Image (cartoon, rainbow, N blue to C red; front, side, top):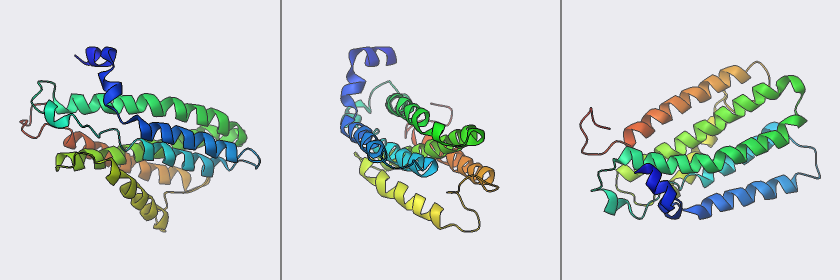
Amino acid sequence: MATEVLRSGHLARSLRLAPFAAGAVAVVLYLAARLDGGPDVIGDLRVLGLLLALSSGYVLDDDAAVTLQASPYCLARRLGLRLAGAVAVVAPLWTAVLAYLLPSAPAGERWALGLGLTTELVAALALVWAVAAGARRHGFEHPGIITTPALLASLFVAASIGRAPMLVGPGPEWTPAHLRWSIVLAGATCVLLAAMRDPAARRSDW
């Protein structure tokens, strides 16, 4: 059934593509604006990751959700297809951005920067999707609008933490900070998986 949904184009037509398009345009405009100045690799990648995460928050908005509640195709699979569609957009854009900006970083730091900043992006994506899935579970038909303030508030909290900083540059705090990002990723993923279960499902049903 999943193959048929993809082949028929129903999934692409049901996704809200405008936020993805706006995010892609914002990425291009940001990079164009930075051409004249020397790149701040970490700062630029964090801004671009934020733009991609914000544009992905609307992927679980689904006008047909009420109609499909009675479908034998379970909620986790329906939402999983939508998330896979978002990944198919974000992953190549992020890869292109890394390929464009990372060569400006010192050679010895490129792998660490790429891995660390990718962890930050994936954690941000898991967070916005967990918020959206949780909001849908509690009756919000279009939860995407909630994800923007939720992500921005989370980043504000992360930036304000002094004793356990998460938004750091290369140095001794880099690895501990990204271990904390990994904890955020794991927690958000658990919340997302729980919110993707069918409300009437038994514990053994997925």
